[in-house]
Length: 486
Image 1 (cartoon, helix red, strand yellow):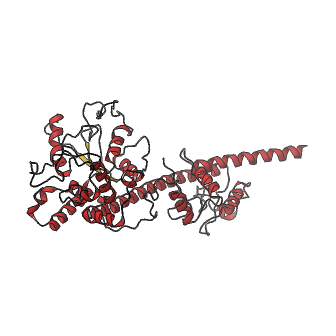
Image 2: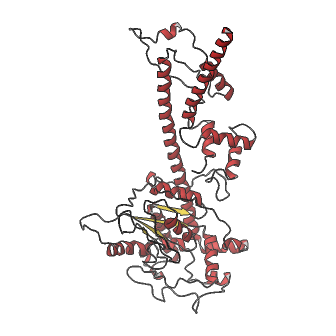
Image 3: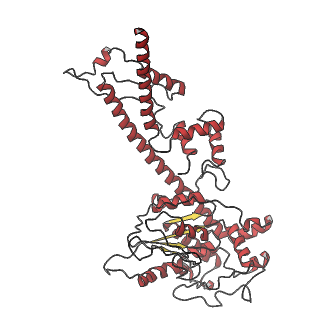
């Protein structure tokens, strides 16, 4: 009976030790509320195999909807940059102070999904003082915390204060003076406000088709001012494409045949500084030279903007906005591809002509898409680096705790094998089992770790390589590709 009781007692002690060690491991691997092991378990059960899969398996997981960032446009997940940008162009992080005097200015280009994004700005951001939106009212009141001052200049907050769908040329000259008039600075000596311009771009062909369908239903933008260099264009400088009140029922051919149609290359024109080409006076220079200047101006202004998004990448747009302004949306953006423009059957030759009519917009969009995806990659890399540094700090803390615990109990400090490039799960389990066995008598080598006065000298605990999820390891690559939306 005594021997049986002794064996049971030893078994209880072993179980308690296993439980304690498991808790320590769990705290290390899952420092946050979202346990990475649980993600791995659920994904491995769905794949029906090992948790660590091949690149093809990982991409399949992403394309099936597990990673909201992968291939939103249906293209391959791997992106190859075409343009070179500076570090300042790619690392967009502004010091937006909503409690101070900073203002976000939304440049809304027609048929780019700007209405949806504008509603996100006034209804879907977590704020200390949310915008006040009432049923039946088109505008919301977006005041700063503790002040009756607005922090957002947009259609749904201040209305079309600088004109219907005001472009960059109009906003840059209108917004500062208008804001100073409505909300005069309390101290004239205080530096002027910081204005952070943002916009949304869209694939030129689908944007053009969407605008045609919008005009075909009777919509017009006659209220647009088109102010440049202090004046609106004359009728000779900006002729109309239709004689009546609107252009309802127009065919796509008629829409494309009008040489004065502002839908052509609209995104370049609305993002460029029109004063560089004499505003709407097309006789100032040749058409080729004019559009080349406008394109470079649009690229320069786009790089200088605090943020821009793409209609085809809703989740990435949300992610970059949150990272740039340190603001969080309440609900995730939704990628909706079933638009009215998408329902139009367009022959390949018609699409080719649309691309020719919008060749400068096509160039701008390719440039913008490259910049956008590079910014996204940089932001994700920075996020992973910060997460890795946090894990390393947690690992150092855990090492110190384990080393202190073992030394305090009089155990020798375990030295883990490190001659293999990566441990399998079986090897890891054997190592843990070996670690939990009762400690052997101190060896001569271990005795050398004692100081001259006989006291133990604290040594570093070397953990197995599978514990340290470095950037290029299989486990890290897997977690990066199946990361869930948080």
